[in-house]
Each structure stands twice: as C-alpha cells, then as structure tokens.
Image (tube, rainbow, N blue to C red):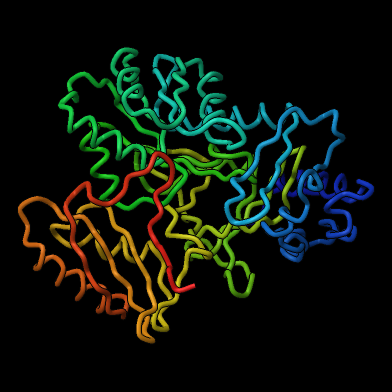
Length: 411
C-alpha cells in the first residue's frame, strides 16, 4: 500500500513540525529528514523505525510533542514486561479517537438505538474509555460495567436489555458459558459482540457466537496508537478496515525491515498522520498480519488488514522448531472433538524440552482418540512431537482480561 497524495502532504507537515521541536524525541532521531525528493515513498521508507523500547526509554513524557498545557489526558501500557509506556493526548487526539471508534460501531451496523455493554477495563488502559467515547458520539446508551463481577454483569445485561457486548474474547467466552450454565439465554437481548485485545481462533469465535446468539466483529488497536478503534471488521468477516486518513500502514519483513507487497504476511508498522500529543513514525507493532489487496464486498473505501496470526514476540523455540500460538490454533481448529480452549506448558526435563499441549474436548468423544489425532497433526503440520492432554470443557482457566496460552518454564 503506497502513500497517497493526501497522506504525503500530511506527513510532510508532521515531519516539519517534529523536526522543529527543540529537544523533542524525534528531532535527534530524524536528523531533519523529510519527504523532500521526487520519490516521497522512498524517502518515507528510509526513515528509521520507532520501537517499543524507545518509548519505554522516553518514560514518563519524553515522547510528548506538545507543551504540557495542551495535554488533557494520558494513557499507559500495562508495564508487565518492563517500564510502562506513557502516551499523552491532546483534546484533538481524544476527539479524533472518538470519531474513529464511532466508525467502528457504524461498520458493525450499530446505531444510537443500541445499548452498549462495556466490559473492558477503565483507567490508564485505553480500552473501556475508548469504547465509551465512540458509543457516546454515536448517541447509543452506554452501560460502563468494566471487567469482573459476573453476577452483576448478567443482571445489568438482562435488566437493561443490552444489545451489544464489548469484551475481550476470553471474557466473552466466560459470560457465554455462564449464560448457558444458568439457562438464561432467553433473557439476554444481545445481537452483536465487538471483540478485541487478543488473538482468538475460529473455534472460540463459533462458540461465543453460538452460545450468545450474536454476530461477532473484530476490533483492532493498541495503546501506543490511540487504543482500540483504529480498525474494525465488517459483516463479511474478511479482515479489518483501517482508517487510513488517520494512519498509514506498512507490512515489513520482521527480520530485514524491508517492505513487503500487499497480500504477504509480515509485521505491521503504523505511522500516525494526525496525532498531536504523541505522534509515532513507523512504529513497529510486532503484530503479524497482511494488507488484503482489492476491494471489500461491503463497499467501504478503507483498506483492510487481515486477522492477526500472532506476534513476533510470541514465538517460542522448542527442540529447534519455531512455534507461534496461532499455528497451534490452526491445527486444533480442524480436529473433530477439540473445543476452543487450549494451554501450552514447556519444560526442560532430563536434558530435553517437553511441550505439553492441554486442550478441552467436547462431550461424548474418546479422549484417547482425540489425543492421538492432535499428536499426529502437530507432528505432521508443525514438525514437533508434543504430549497431548485432553481435558473436559471448563477445566482450563478462564479470564476476565486476556487468557495466557503459553507458559515457558525453562528459564
């Protein structure tokens, strides 16, 4: 996907501004670089990437590109893997984010007649408040629950007749299972679910959709780039439309850093075009996806990225084989009798790596037969011998946030 004329002009203005900020994060990094030659695409692709480590090093507000008095809010990453990343927002940033989020709801056919049940967390995390901003701009009724307290979630869902659920896939599954267990599906009015924050496979999608009786939509975003709401799937479920008037998307080879053509999978790199508080130039997201070529059946002019297949930093090496969780999901998806939930334990015992793959099995199937099928499929498709362990549905842990899938106990 090449820069269009509007994006090029916007980027020229942004780079000029960033190069002019005394002591700014990007002034030293860019060294005065701009899109000044007759080949702005080549100029842009010669700009340095921005990494998550650099944003951590800029803690707390070294990334800010406006004076303090223009900053109206900050959000932050969790900081679970190191120093948290602080992202400052101007009022325009907040307003732009709400506009993008409103588009997401509209892409899913959600209107001001809907009642939107928001379960992602509030606070420093971008999720809950982002869902709320867009819903309020849309004019829908907002039910700002936040995570946890399943009993109260279900009571409000029934009493207020929520029609749209926003959640992580893990919490959506937890709620769906509780609704099924309690036999209250006829008292639930949900018609749509907007799901984000973590990768989820087809089996999990089908379970949530069937048990809740809803149409599901994928939403994309990350704290460093506004938050959720920068991309959204449509009714045709063929990737997520992204708002290219606010951001420019590239796909690169994660090893070489070279740009890949549309249609090829690689690492997603995002540049913000209009962000004021913390603009990001060629930010490496670590998310693995591709730009889907061609037009979508829905008729939207916005380009699409594919459903995420994983992250570059999710990879683990076992017995010399590189493995992504998405690969395991793809194998399990096609095996009859395997449900949606799985968990991986990697240990080093007696001088050897051992990978145990726990997975939930559907009622009425032979656990031994399914285990053998999983073992053979993993061996033939990934090239690794695993210890398969089938368990009953509900035995693996559920989460109100993101579900941890891989536990590497070797280090």
